Image (cartoon, rainbow, N blue to C red; front, top):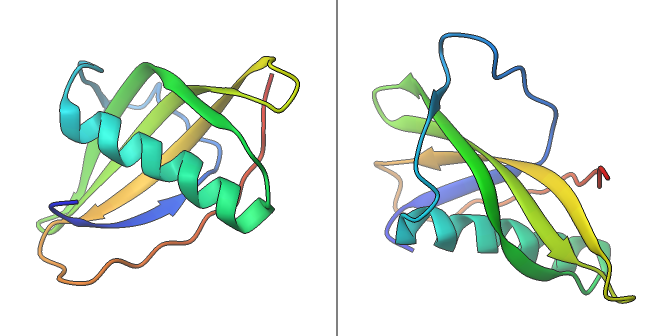
Length: 107
């Protein structure tokens, strides 16, 4: 990854003017959303398969931190597609990766 990320899944009110919708095709967005699934699998001892982003937003928290919100699809061990959201704090100036994930699957 080109930046360090703090990954946390939580609820988000994106109706606020602070959030800006962004295209999901960006390779960096794909990379950090896949990281959210990987961290979930590691911390929850789960085996979700990443199936892609279907919506994404960002907002600037300060000069060095962006926050991304992803609506993602993952395939569970039964082959069912589940939806979830991930909030990724991207510390632009950081040199080390700090990751933490709290995961709530929403369907």
